[in-house]
Length: 515
Image 1 (cartoon, rainbow, N blue to C red):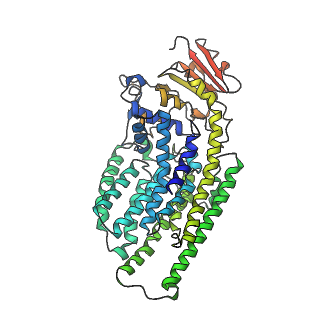
Image 2 (cartoon, helix red, strand yellow):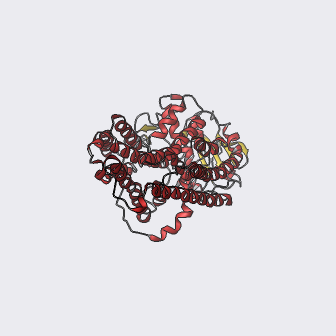
Image 3 (cartoon, helix red, strand yellow):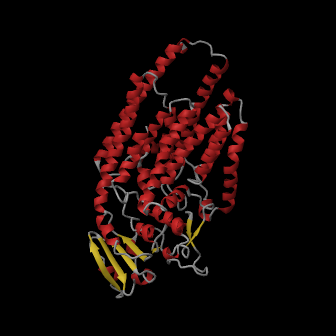
């Protein structure tokens, strides 16, 4: 399982310098802010304020910032991204352990590692799903056999989830309490979960007081839309124009089905062997309690999946500034539904083929991603060559007009210039900080010592045609444009802006006198 996980997660990231995840460049930029916040040469402290409690999407940034102490910014961010994705099989393995099934079934989680959400760059969301499954598994283990170590593990997992994705955290609290209630007929225990809940509940109460206005949300109207069930395939594996992706997803589904049949055959053989099919009375004592526990526990992941499926069917596409809302929930629902998978057969003649089938399913999808990521690496060589001309800490305005040149169905070029801030510091014309929904936020412009880029219209990054050099260009001294038709007309009204270089589809300009 470990070897399969390493290949499935690491191989696509290893073949590309800048992974074509749409939002990853800004995850990298914000990670660099934490790493270099106190370094005046990067000019982050005069732009940003840090709010790790008010907007606690911190785990990937904290890990990446630590890795930047010993790795390059690009390598550190890729390792941090891999860690978020590794939580999927790891969390599912803990869940299956708590369900008294083989942790090797955690390999099932690899099947969703390279879904659309990952290619969008929603890595905190993906990591939170793994932590959610881990929390449920640790709750089951704790209630089955309480120990101080398991209490500490559950407390740490809940805190990690809080700092990974705050909106998944309340569902985890409900899952912990709900799990305790569901297995109570077998355990007769509720008290063991009280202490592990305490630290994260204190953090959650503090967040409710400190959260930004953006995270206070707004009223949401729920309405069941059953037609969305037909959207599920398109919401999972349609990240590339490459038809090999759909073919790999189909093969993966058939391999998982084959493994399911093998596991079901093994389960039927076990039941026949112990005579359960004949309908004997439940075993007394510990064995009977364990059987009752297993039956009750099996309800938990199914109930969690049902909740997320309900959210998928009822949430809107947008809530305030939050976009692509309901499609995220089908991934959560399917991931938790994997917890209904039967245990691996005890017979090696069935067990080995089942594990190999599950591994092959994930490897097939990952190999397609690896191939398309390798192709994207070739399409960013012009970008890499051009940004080498940009000095440290530039005031960089960037405009991406053309999004072609990759096999991605959603543009991977939209935020690509944010890697300049991640690797060199300085300012950007557009930044996620403007939404006040990240741990990194812009300082108030009137604050003494603040040097903050001018505001931009909503959806500025998607509408570069709104750019007017006289209105939007004065603050900046470097200009990076992706436009096949050429960029000279964009700057014609400001003669102080002169061309520097042109490589491929990228054009670089600077203001006369700029370093």
